[in-house]
Image (cartoon, rainbow, N blue to C red; front, side):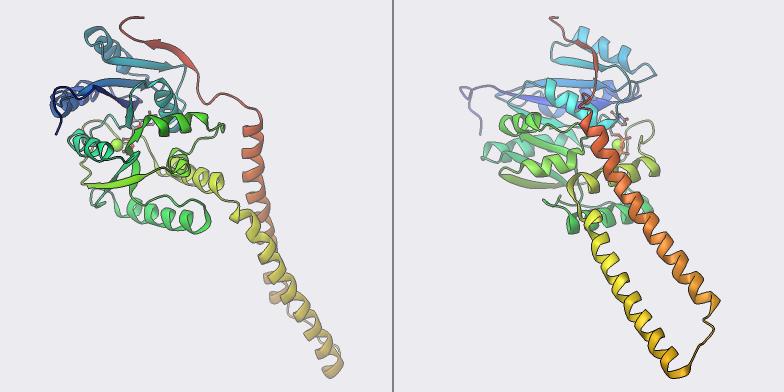
Length: 318
Ligand code: UDP
Ligand code: MG
């Protein structure tokens, strides 16, 4: 239990927003409803406007005028949720930081529970979806396939069904800020920094308003980003595949020589030649594609471009 003389702790809610004009007011109202009454806790809202083209920025600025707890980091264009999250985490000043979606799919009612575990001494408190009933079948199965493949080939593994919604202590946030890479797969980075971790389960509600910003293609690219950022297994597997195929073809060559010696000259089948040719061609192209995937990432990383650009940070006293 909190007593009146417990020192104030500051909690930052970091919220990336992209075309979410209808969710912002409801989000703040809902968070205040569950959090404003908590003793010993002061709130900070850090919204990151990720290049919205609707009235999102106007709504956010109205909140900045009305409420000194609100900060708005206005990015110069849409950089994507991962970059926007980095921007928000870098701007947050709290003793603990909670990244949240503005669509109320990360329920504010859970935050007091996260805080409780944090006060018990955990530096990271993960919120895990106890079911994926809200998602379509395809999203559910592809998500579980992603976690399985990722965790098979990557170190460290990321806990399945845990999104960006979590509470992080200041030490964790500072560690994240020190990671140098500019291609940011946040789930992977969150897992990479480690620290003492607790898990809290919750039911994920449906979106409050508007549409999901993640199409199948965007999710596919996010999955590729995750796999290639944290594993080199797709590169190395070609060595073994190549080795196996070469051994098989040497064995086959020996077999043919043997057959010619025993049976005399034979006219080989056209079909088997074409199959072998196209199969090997396909494998080689895939191998080159995977090399390209990594080379492209190395190239982009080597430019050392910033993760995002800020047009302006809006705060009440600035
Ligand atoms: N978002 C963002 N930039 C983007 C796409 C999404 O800042 O390019 C924000 C979005 O406004 C929301 C959060 O990321 O607050 C999660 O997006 P969404 O709800 O569409 O994802 P889903 O819940 O469907 O995975
Ligand atoms: Mg959502």
